[in-house]
Amino acid sequence: MAHMLATLGGGCFWCLDAVFRRLQGVDSVVAGYAGGTRPNPSYEQVCAGATGHAEVVQIAFDDAEIAYRDLLEVFFAIHDPTTPNRQGADVGPQYRSIILVHDAAQKAEAEAVLREQAEAWPAPLVTELRPLEKFWPAEDYHQDYFAHHPESGYCQAVVGPKVAKFRKHFAARLRPA
Image (cartoon, rainbow, N blue to C red; front, top):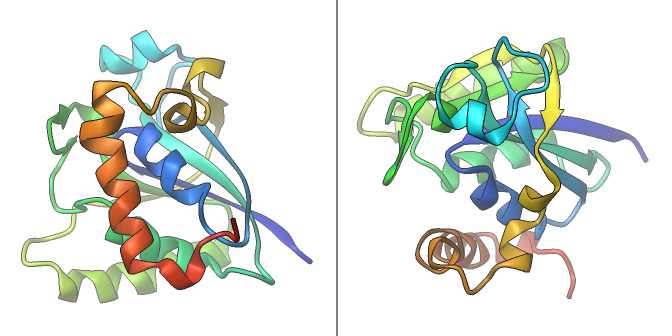
């Protein structure tokens, strides 16, 4: 049983967090920030656009149960990798599409998946592919946000529909209830 990490950003981390927590083989998900320059950034600093960070999730997974490639397939199914610095109404560099790789094997796999995905989308992909330099966990109130705030307007209008889409398209990969 090998435990691995994946770090992905594709819009608001609340959406990615809610989806990946439901995926079989995922041990944990931590919302956070990566890809920027400021040490230990706050949510307010990241949202102001001055740190260069993206909102990301760091996923701990068991690669005996789920492959890194499978995580990338889910990633591309739940966000639009063709819109620079935005996902839907969420606009800013913190919402960019980004894959932060942990090693050479992840880089090779991500490059292969990016080539495949480029054929599937009607517009060019803008997904960044970079080595992970540092991951900063987000503030506690961002962790598992959808489970703690399902009644919020954002969760009902944005997160909930992404989770429903994921459940429909990836039913066989859902964590047992």
